[in-house]
Length: 94
Image 1 (spheres, rainbow, N blue to C red):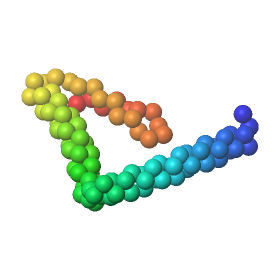
Image 2: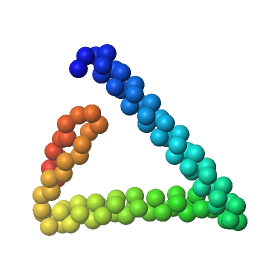
Image 3: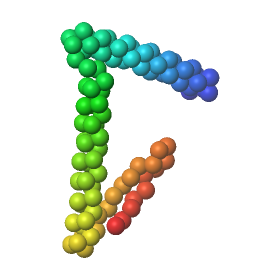
Image 4: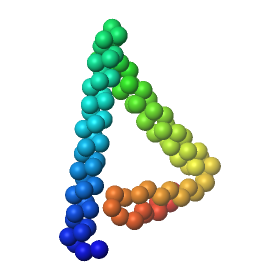
């Protein structure tokens, strides 16, 4: 694949993703309109979703912390692979 073909493919992919994002934004706007038309408070529901998303992330962090504490307390070695953006994952041994 030539550089021009690769660049063209990237442009097409970027355009497609941006179109999808625009479509999702429209869907979100329609959903908020529907929520409001049913008499619900859109801001309150957005806050509930934000809390639920945060709780999910907190639970994952708590789980990982529990694993690390267990490994430390028992002397168990844990091999973790944490992928780096645009590079090969490096192995970390605790």
